[in-house]
Image (cartoon, one colour):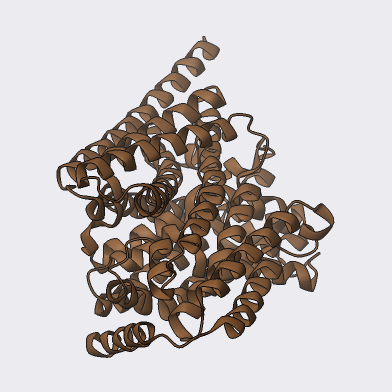
Length: 503
């Protein structure tokens, strides 16, 4: 009888949680339909008509940034290795802040001044007056390569989510998450991605505060929690235990990646005006700090709880999911679970829309055909979302890699390829198209080689050598190929004037 009651309770819990998940997914689809009705041309589809307010910009950038790594990858790493893994969070917070200060205002102004660019490749081509189209094509190919891997990491997280939460087959979960994200991204475009990111960002934020706050009561408060963690391993509370200088440098260096992440910096291009960026920065960094703190606290409380209860978890990356199910009523736990989906889906959708723009705006429209109608371009953008999604699903199908390992490789690829080029294009008049091209290629190749040689990647995160090599190559090739261009000088001055005017 007791066994039957346990089975009934388990089934009831699953039903409550499924209700919350279904409601959440239905809301995402509705937002996608709403955005679809407001999308009429390619600029709307790819950039939302440059109409985002500061809160939408900040929350959508944060949600697009963090992905399943925030609620699964980071807590899992902290759970296994302790606070030494928190250096990644420190580096990311610093990098995000500098991104808002150094990149956001100038990129918003410069992309409007220079050809009203709506993608990173089109901005670089217009900014550097590269008539060969090689720079635009190369940057688009880099986006396609690394984002396809990045999207697949989100789909891996989706499959793991349904497997650990409801016992569904990994592949079934992967297909469910993929189908919903593809639907609202394919039809609603950038506006759907941004609006859903706001909902997802708020959901993630609340979940990451509620789980550690209520979990702390279960583990007996701060002192009891710390005592239990030390019982497991006192070094788990040490920020430098077992870490080398290069290890800490590698973790903090994650912050370098922000300057080159297309799915994040495209939000700066879409904000309604330069003067709104300061408000967006305050909202975005506040959201990020508290969310990262909540993720770290969740992992530490998980260590204490399972030490006290004598239990364990099979997969460290599911510690947030397991604690949510233990702490809350099944319906509330379902909302906690929806936060995982929010993190996963917000990043997948953001990456899909940028990849779509690379295929349509920067390859098809720029190189193959320029006389199609807006309706045709939007249709092609939607087909691009579908094609990239299918490739990413194929890559995610084996479930061989951890979420963090796939994300770290893709993050390094973008940071090293685009980061130095973006910074130099915004602050240095003498950067040239050839300098940017060879710098991007050098950065991408460095990451591809370094990241796939264990002896190198285990010593130093590939973003560090990639970023340095990209910067050096871009600088010296630009110095060797620089020729003064009156149009570039005029646009550089116009961008600075716009910044001064809108301060």
